[in-house]
Length: 184
Length: 244
Image 1 (tube, rainbow over the protein chains, first blue to last red):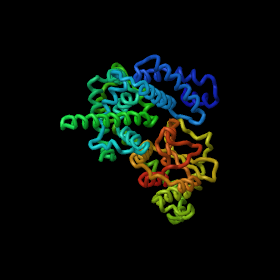
Image 2 (image 1 turned 90 degrees about the vertical axis):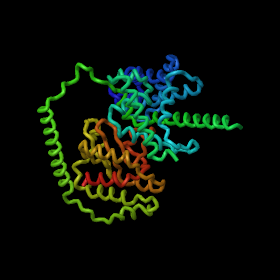
Image 3 (image 1 turned 135 degrees about the vertical axis):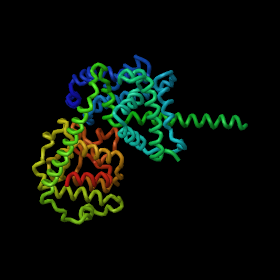
Image 4 (image 1 turned 60 degrees about the vertical axis):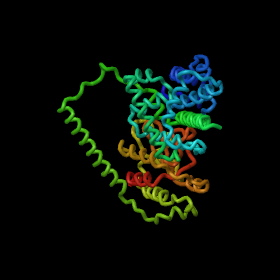
C-alpha cells in the first residue's frame, strides 16, 4: 500500500491503519530502535508507542513520507528511553555521539543558546550539497544509527570506504558549522 | 588548586561541553528533511552482476550528443512558453503599490521582494487562466515538478510545470538563502495575498514562506498555511524569471 493510502486510513480512523503500517514499516522501525537501545524488548515497546503516537497525531498531520515521519517518532522515543535509563552501553548511541564530537567547530561556545531550528537548517543545507551516496551514508549512520559494516553491506561498499567517507563528512560538517557561525 | 588538577578540571569541563554539543547535534539530525530520511531508507546497491558494462567511446559520444540536443530543445521550448505567458503582461503598478495596500511594512525590510512576486503573479492572472485547477485535480504525484500559486480571492490554484533545472535551482536558492522572518503584523497582511508552493511531483510540496521544521510537514501545505518567512531576494528574482 502506498504511503498516502495508509495515511488516509489514519484520517478515516480505520482499524487497518496500524496493521498496514506494521506490515510496511514495522521491521525498519524495530531495527532503528534496536540500533539505539540494543534491547529487543525496549525496541518493541518503542515500536508500539510509535504506532500510538502516529494514531494520535493523524488526522492533523498528513505526512508525505510516512516512513520518515514514523522514523523520526521512534528515534525520538528511543533516545528518550536511552537517556532516562542512564545506561551507558558499548556501541549504539554512545559511539555515534562520540564520533560527532569531530564535528564540533573550533572555538565553539558551550554557553551559547542556539536558536531553535538553526542547527537543523544548517544540517539540511549541508546534506543538500552532498552527492546522493554520501548523503545516504551520513543519514544511515547518524539518523538510523546503522553500524558501519551494515552500511557497507547495504550499499555494496567496503567498510574502509564507508569509514573514510564518514570521516570526511564529519570534517565537512564541522567546516559548514564554522562557516555558519557556530563558533566564536 | 594545583596547576595539574586545574588543567584536569578544565579538560573534564571541555570534554563534557563537547559531549553535550555532540548530543545536541545528534538530536537535531533526528529532525532533518523527510526526503533525506526516505531516500536513505531505501538505500541499496544493485548487485555486481547487474551492473551495466562500461559504455564504449562511441556510445558515450552518442549519449553526450543526445543529452546536449535534449537540453537545447528544452531551452527553446522554455523560451517559447515564456514568451506565450508574457504576451500582454505589463507591470503597470509601481513596485511600492502592494506595500501601500498592506500598510506600513517598511520595518520588515522585505517589501521589494514581496512586491515583485505579488506584482508578477497579479500581472499573469489573465494569461494563466487556462492553468487553473481545483485542489482535487492538482497533479502532485505524476513525477513532474511544478510551481503552484493561488490568488486569495479565487478558489482554484494555478500550476505550471518546471524543468528539472528550474526546480533544482529554486530548491538550491531556497536552501542556501534563508528568507527573513516576518513580524506577526506583516504575516497577517501577507496571508491575505498569494500563496506559492513548489510541488516536487512525488506528493511533497515546499513553500518558500515557511520554515523547515518537523511541524511544517514537507514545510508546506496546499490547504492553508500562515507564512513565517519572506522569500529571499535571490529566490524571488529567479522565480520571477521563470514566471515571466
